[in-house]
Amino acid sequence: MNTLKGLFQITLPVRGYEIDVYGHVNNAVYLQWLEQARWDWSRTHKMGIEHEDVLSVVRHLELDFRHEVLFGDVVEITLWPRQPKNTSMIVGAQIKIIQSDKPQHVGQVALNAQMVLATIHKQGGGKAPLPQRWRDFFPDKDPGPAPLD
Image 1 (spheres, rainbow, N blue to C red):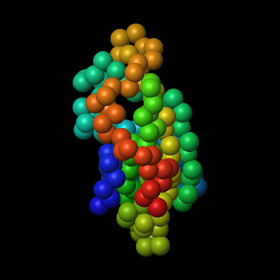
Image 2 (image 1 turned 60 degrees about the horizontal axis):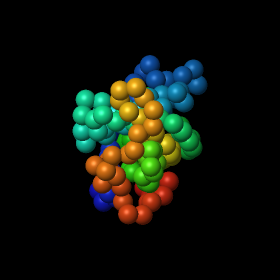
Image 3 (image 1 turned 180 degrees about the vertical axis):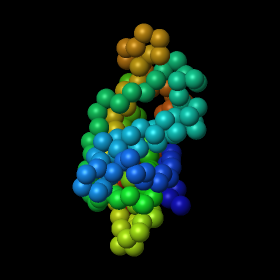
Image 4 (image 1 turned 90 degrees about the vertical axis):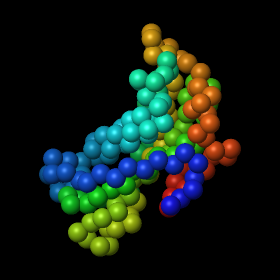
């Protein structure tokens, strides 16, 4: 297991309705997977809507598609805090195939991503300072965009 500070992982199977006409996972599904991981990460660390006066919202997202994902595959979605800012944070993400009917696909990185999450006030929106409790999840130095390769 990687010991990167703040590392968070979930595992999801590819479902039939996530497949497009070309026989692989539709590109929009990757966004849904990242969002699921982000919500699970927030809830696990009690940083979600039910615990804070501050919320995180996606402000910017960079996606680097690296390998196709197919029906029957199982993926591992990993998030890690990269860099805290005043009213936002940079979070790295990676989707890796961990189980497949095609053995050569196992271990392949399907997607590398970087998310900039803005922090806003729960009541009334508007920018909010990144809470110190959230800052505590970040390493002293940015581990980079894909430390899991």
